[in-house]
Amino acid sequence: MKTRMMLGMLIIMSLTVSFLLAQEQLATISPAKPKIGDEILITYNAMVKSATLRNAKDITAEVLLSKSSPEMPQLIELPMKSESGVWKASFKLSDDKARMLLVRFTSGEQKDDNGEKSWETMVYGANGNALEGAHLMRASMLRSGSYIDFKLTKDADAAKKEIAMERELYPENYGALSLQWSLMMREAPGDETKAKIKNELDALYAKKPAKEDVVVLCATWYQQIGMKEKADEMRKSAIAADPKGKVAESARISEVYSEKDPVKRVAMMEKFLADFPQKGSAKENYENTLMSLYLSAKKYDEAEAILAKMPNPNGNIYNSLAWSLIEKGEQLEKAVAWAKKGVDLLKNPDPASKPAYLSTSQWKKSNEMGLGMILDTYAYGLFQLGKTPEAESAYEEAFKMTKGEEAEINQRLIECYVKNGKYDKAMTTGLDCIKKAKSNEKLVEACKAAYVKVKGSDAGFDTMMAQAKEAAKGDLKKELTKGRVNKPAIDFALKNLEGKVVKLSDLRGKVVVLDFWATWCGPCKASFPYLQQVYNKYKDNPKIVILALNTWENVSGKEREDLVKKFIADNKYTFTVLYDEGFVEKYGVEGIPTKFVIDKKGMIQFKTIGFTGEKMVDEMIMQFDMLLDDNFYSSLN
Image 1 (cartoon, rainbow, N blue to C red):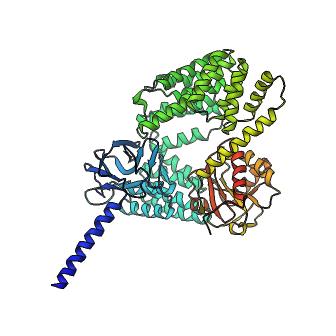
Image 2 (cartoon, rainbow, N blue to C red):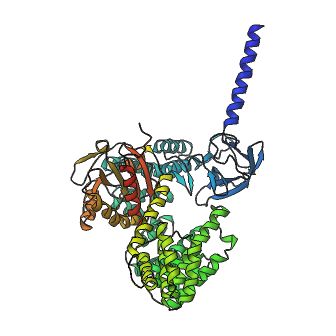
Image 3 (cartoon, rainbow, N blue to C red):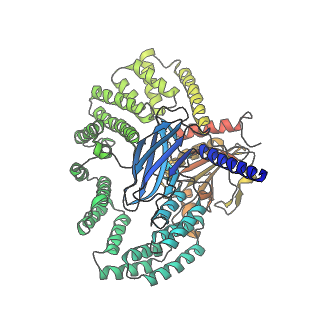
C-alpha cells in the first residue's frame, strides 16, 4: 500500500514537473513535425520571465515560409489572441512548396526573436522525413546565420550535419554537395581542399554525364578549383548537343558578367535575353539586371523604357535612374521628371508591389526611407536648376521622412536654407544635427556661412561648434553602450603580410580592432581610407592595435598573397593585415566588412556590419575612449 502511494506520488510529481516545464516554454510550433495540409498552432507564453513582450497589449506572430527554389519566401502575419497570458494563433500550411517555418513575435516596435535565434522547424512528409530541400535550406541558414532578416545562430558544424542528412535522404539533390564544397573552401581554402573536391567532382560527372543540371554544377566547380580547361571542354560538349539548353544558358550569362566593357556587356545581355527568353521571377530579375547595365553604360532612356513597362514599377529604381544624371548635373530636366515619378509612386504605393517576404510595417518603413532618399534626389535636381524654393520644400520633406538620420540629406537642406537666405533656420537645424552626430564637414561649413551672415563675423563659432560636438559625443556614447556585445573573443594565430604570426591572446591588455575584408568587396574598400585615418591617429599608442583580416578571397595560396600585398601596396595602407584561415566563420561573420572591437580583457564589446561613412571614424574614436577608460566595466572577472 505504501509502495503504491509512493508510486502514485511520483507519477503526480512527474506530471506536475512536465506541466510546469511546458508552461515555461516561451514559444511553440505545433505539430512539432508539420506536414503540408496541417493546421499549425503558434503559441507565445508572455508569463515566462524571459519574454520580451510580457506587457504587450497585442502580439503578432510573424511566420516566414521558406520555399523550394526558385520560389520566393512568404511572410504570414498572424494576429494572436491571449488566454491567461498565453497568446495563440493558427493557420493552415497549404503551400506545397514550403520547406521551413521561421517564427518571431512583434508588438509595435518591439520584437522577440528568441535572442536572435528565431524559432524554426522543417516541413515533413508522411514518412516522417523532412521534405526534399528542407535540410539543405536549414544548412544554408545555419551557415549564414540569417535568412531575409530572421536571425539564427551561425553554426558551421550543425550546417554540415544538415547537409549530410540531405545527401542521405535525397542523393539526387546536388545542391547539398555544392553547399558542402562552399563550406570546405571557406574553412580551408587551398590545394588539399581543391583535391578533395576534384575527386568528388570526377565521381559525380562520371555518374551523371548527361544531366544538364549536373554538367552546369560540375563545370562551375571545376572552374572554381582552377581547372578551367576541363570546365570549358564539358560546356563545349554539352552546348554542341543542345545549343539552347541549360548549359548553354549558364555559359552565356557567365560571359555577360565576365565582360568588363559596359557597352559590350549591355549588348551581350540583350542578345542573351533574346536567345534565352525568361519567365516569371527570373524574367523580372534579369530585367532589373539589364536596367543596371544600361545605367553603367549611360543608356538612361533604355533603362527608363524597361521600368515604364513593368506592371508594378518600383519608385526606388527611379531614384537610381534619376540620381545617375542628377549627381553629375546632366540632363537635369529629364532626370528631375524621373525623380518626380518615383516620388509619386512611393507616396502612393500599390499594395500589389509589396514583396511577399516583408511584413506590412517593414514595407511601410522601407517605402518611407525610399521616399526620403528620392525626395533628396528630386530636391538636388531642383536646386541645380535654380528652383531653390521648391528644392527647400522637398528637402524638408526628405529630412522628415529620414528622421534627420542621413548626414548628406541634412547637409543639403542646410545649404538650401543658406541659398534661400534663411540663415537663422540654417543655424538652428544645423546645430541640432551636429549635436545628434548626424552631420558632416560640409554641413558645418554651411552652418558657419549662416553664422557669419547672422553675426557679421565668425567670432564665437568655433566655441559653439565645440559645445555641439561635445553634446554629440554624449549621444554617441549612449548609442554605443546600448549595442555592446560583451562576449569572449576567439583566440587565433595568423600570419601577417611578412609571414610573422600574430596571436590575439598575446595582445591582452590592449584594445584590438578586427576588420574582416576582401579585395573584391566594395564597402570594404570604401571603408579603408577611414580605417587608415584612425590608424594614423593611434599608430603611436601602444594600447591600440588595428588588424585587417583578409578573408573570403576567390583565390588561395601564393595567388591570394600576391593579390593582397599588391592591393595594400598600391593603396599605401600601413595598418597590419593578416591572412584569415577560417576564423571569419568562428566569429559568426554574416557579411563583410564586419568590425569587432575587443577590450583589454579579451572581450568583444562592439560589432559593426557594413560601412557607415564618415561616422565610422567618430564611432571608433569613441569606442577607444570608452575601452581605455579605467572605469570601463567588462563582465570578465
